[in-house]
Length: 309
Image 1: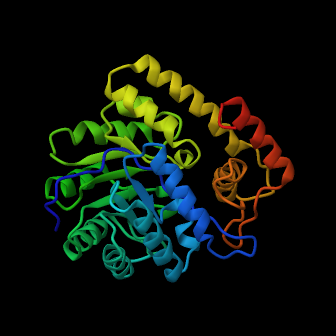
Image 2: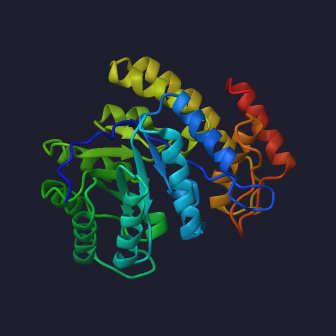
């Protein structure tokens, strides 16, 4: 179990995974994305998360992505790695491999596919924390795990030193606020919102940071938002959030029903990065479809309107 003080606050984007036209990992583009994020002033990087298409990557691809980002980052900011698998033993294997490759912390979901409950989920996180010597964050993402992590369990695991915090992608703003309130007296227990468009409200409520998929596209914008919040300039924070909310409209450009919801959001991020010259293609992991020319043109209009092109 880790006793390391938290270094994970601020803006920690979940890094996308670029692919070549034939579907292979695009390592030069991945290196470019990493440099783009570092140049944007991020506080850390989250590798092999949902925005990185983690469940579509083979173990070899996951390792290559993490190794590449750790290499480019070279200790400039901490790197969190996703340990996302169906059951505890598979997560433990993933976690140990990520730490060996240089991850400074882990973000682990509850079990998925396996039908579980709060008791088993607590045992799951305790096993992960006992198996590694880096901080472990709970990844609350019920849209993917089909299990909402109970606030009482997260607080218990925080007080026991099992968890270093929570990456909340539940979309449940009431539960998020209750978690922040309940955790205020737990030292080094950091709570991040996965929201892109209500970050100012989350920070005002006491969150320690944000893990925004849109941060791949505009890391500097999220850094300005975070810095304004830290300075107590909520008017400026809201203004920056309003601009980022406009940028987020890129996820609504795909034609209804043509691509999956997963491919629409991540595809929009990749398409924006392609238009900005940071990655070569907007190819998605199989079997997801890439955004087409019309959808790309619509995203270009938004990027131009919001000052990113």
